[in-house]
Length: 244
Ligand code: 13P
Image (cartoon, rainbow, N blue to C red; front, side, top):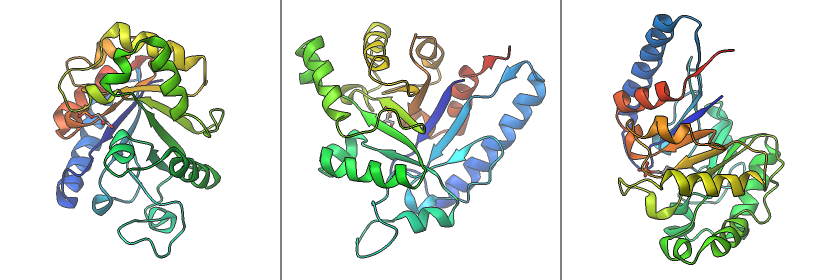
């Protein structure tokens, strides 16, 4: 079963997310009605900004957190902790996104602490890895070593782990990695972990079907194209698989 996740980043207000989520639940209702039981709904997640978190009570998708500190609560100005997530009944979190590693200087050690804390709390962890263009251009060995280093200290057999491969050079550029690049990277990752493997980086309603058909791609993590509910609904529809 595919996993389709939308990462809103610092986009959309609380009011916009409230209207988006209501619309998404009802459009998935009508889609399922029209398809009867012929299809299996993918597992769908939305990651709104912290001020737009909503109670996790939707019918067809789960709400998760883009980030939180590895503490229940306390002196961590600007952050939220586990207690704030629990108020919304959230149990999914993104850790290791390249924007947190890059812009907010999160080290592998810091990310490890976050991983351990939220794994201990039983969260589903969307753990992101991905190389910059320079590393990609150094060839397969350098790429493999780099991605492995981003997994160091992470329990890759954690049962609620989902790994998202998001090459930095494909994020927000409108140019996703090629089918060949995704396939070879995901094949390598599948030898390191049995966790579901998502691809992220300029996934949209036009390329989602092709990307989801690549071997070892178990879903997608979508940024810009998830911001419009119509586009995201089409991506979800690309992720339906016929029931057996
Ligand atoms: P885009 O889909 O905008 O490239 O963003 C991908 C991403 O960073 C999702 O986490």
